Structure formats: C-alpha cells, structure tokens
Amino acid sequence: MAVKESLEAPVLSFMTKGFAKVDVDDSIFQAAEAMARLGATEAIVTRGGSPAGIITERDILYKVVAAGLSPQQAKARDVMSAPLQTIDESAKAAEAIAKMSKLGIRRLVVTSKGEPVGMVTQKAVVAGPRGEHVVLPELASPTSFSCPYCDATMKTREELSKHIDQVHLGPGLLEGDRSKW
Image (cartoon, rainbow, N blue to C red):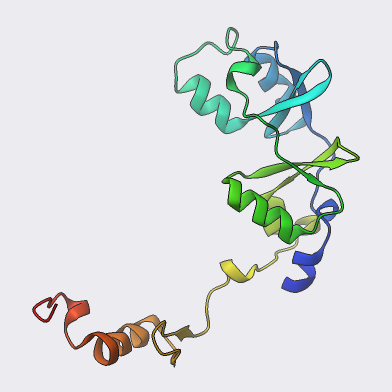
C-alpha cells in the first residue's frame, strides 16, 4: 500500500474489534486477567456500563507493579487514564496518527455513533492493514539532505554538515572551534 493511500485509509482498516472491558471497581488483577484472556494490551474501564477510561499494560507495570501496589487491592479507577480518547470510525489513518502524536498516546478507541467498536494503535497503523509494512513519510530514511539555510541538497549527512560549516557558519565551528563566536 502506498504512503498516501495508507494515510487516507479509514481507521477501520487498522482497528481491532476485540477489547477487554472492566468496571471501575474491578481490581487490577481482574483487569489483567481480562486482558490476558483476549490477548489485549489494554482494557476499557466502564462506570455503569459507560466507558470511563482505559488501562494499559504500561499502566499496570508503572502505576501498580513499580509503585509496589497490590494488584488484588488496587482498583481500575485508581490506575486508569481518563478521559477516554476516541476517534470516529469514519476518520482517516492520518487523523489517528496526528491525534495520538498530539496527545502523546499509543491508542485510540474507535467509536460508531459514540459507542466503542474497536481500538486503533500506533503499531497497527505503522504495520498497516493485515500486517503490511507501511513506510510513513516522517519515519522514512531520507535519500538526500537539504540545508536549512539555503535549501542546497546534499547526498549524505556528512556533506550537509561540511556545507553548513564551511558556507554558513565558518570553518571549524562544528569541530568545536568557537573562537569566532
């Protein structure tokens, strides 16, 4: 799948439908069991049947295990991240990537008419639908390097560094000679 096509694909193409659900009053041990049963890396936390937050493997590791809390005693409400971050099923993959990046998170709950229908993760979007490899522009290795000062194009980082040093900054600066500065 081409980059443009992959970024324009609906999040449904990257979504998993199965996700664990736990109640806010369930223990972290119960949440981990529910996640393990489904092979999920997260569980949606509900309050009165409505989504209230999310618990991830990292939450359990950092907020429970590393903090020395008892998984049998700690409650989902104490560990969950809230509010739940969602994206509509009609959204494009590019929108999901942008939202996750902006919020500093790795997953979004996909909704249809406000109800959770699945989960989309950064990993799924980068791997592509059905495990295909998708090269995203911001992750691709550059084939050339442009000077930020004059837009000259160089073949290697070393050439660019030498160009900037000699043309824009003056010889020696990048090697540590700060006498001119």
